[in-house]
Length: 470
Image: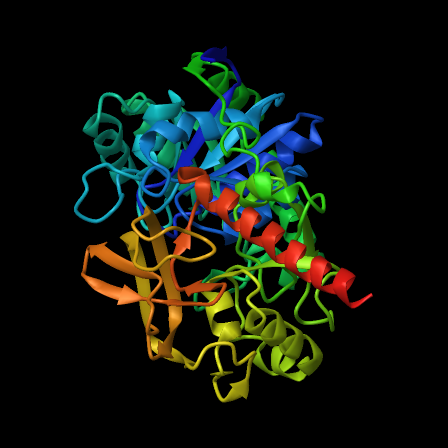
């Protein structure tokens, strides 16, 4: 049912990556949450790490809005699902305001998301090496697409009071409101490594302190009342909120033994997941239980399906390898035909080895770190029937890794990429579907339903076999 959905909202964008979007967006979320507001955090694009900081700032799941992977038609419904009941929504952009999927125009850009949400944009500008030129820069971004409403600017990395005066004078001439000025503050910087910021799960105490410092910096430097007033200018959205309860058909296979247990890898080594995946599995009839491959020596009791998403297993290869009991449990589960969905980090964990350290040995393949970054959107079709997808299923996804696995595909590959390059990738064997490709299941809810049914069928086989032995 299409409804009118009215929540104040802002999109935090920038001219380019590295301007301070995450600093400002996370600080705004935390500062408004400290005022007692229910703040809904969102991230444009496929990034997994920034939403972890957003969740820490707001106490709510960080949610992604990706117009490439989910399609433009799902951006507003997914936003409405996440922001229901909130006082304010803050959307952190991706890359530069108008940067999107390569060769696809505005598709998956922050500008497209802002237009789909009818949301005003706050532009975060790194002012460290400019003064009056800032007006020309901002004028260009404000006039490039008349459908994008630039509501004001937050100046970042301002060097001095005099520098601030020059910047404000230039922007006043251009008629652009200055909604905040942030000075250089290295004490609130968050550490990075080969794929971006270090995830919250790996530095919980330090991350909490960093978010608190960001909130303080934003409170001191930004006009929160003016920003809230701007957010309230966003008109109502007319859309049907996305719902995990109606997206998939409930799994019929769950009936004989109740809800099948689907174990989802978590902890510091496996931090990449979209909140909607667990919601879809639950709606399809599963009981979702999280476990930590670094510490847990057995799979959760009654596991009928296993999901191992993305993360940084290369950072924790020695610790993962040292947990031989769990590696053997995963290997035995897969060898017995148990359904396993493994994405990127999960693929590496299922390999025979990672950087020379023994892994689960489910796949006859070896993985290692590489100097080359593999990054970009992909259009894919399922090559082989699996517990995750029927052959012919089409999905859009994203690759983001600095590792390679050899061979790159098994006898039955998981995906065939159709754009931007043609190749096969990943492994399907017995119940295992393992691939580098990150996907968003909200775009194809049948994935969650199919996997839940496979987990229910596996549970039934195990329990019937146990009953026969008694």
